[in-house]
Image (cartoon, rainbow, N blue to C red; front, side):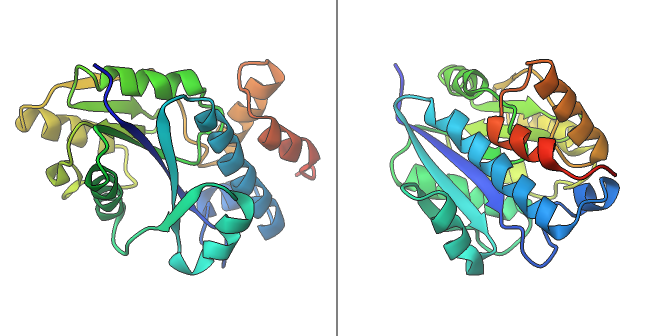
Length: 223
């Protein structure tokens, strides 16, 4: 039986040079270009998410002072600020909020995989009908998506965030807790210049469907 489904997109506003710093440095992007990409990454992600049926969609944003930035760009969607703390604490809070509202399964997704099709997100929810946890492995050793059937704070404690050990440590934690896990097809987060080039190649080949991002990429100045 399909239970109530909630999808949370975690996003960060490109203010003060704090968003996508590795991408900005490695791809030699100026602040205006970074802001344009961050915005289109988010909007393409939300366009894919909106293709899902019977799913409650919310944006969980940071920093809290940038509500106006998000309200302007995602009008009609509920937005809530992320709590203070590391990535694990912020995801726990996002899960707790949705389960507290009565969701039966919750998927949390970042906003730096604009090429991720809605079918992959739908698959995550389907896997949660028979598993406690679903993970979308990222090629850099982390994960681009995580879904749960119940809030499990222990999955996010003492994880070496921003390293290539995140996925392995998380899977070990899942097994130690005796939970059933399903993994989706791996893909890449757009974190650096090589990722951006891969995304551009995927767009050119018709493999990545993210038209807003494609438009911005087509207008980036030659480096």
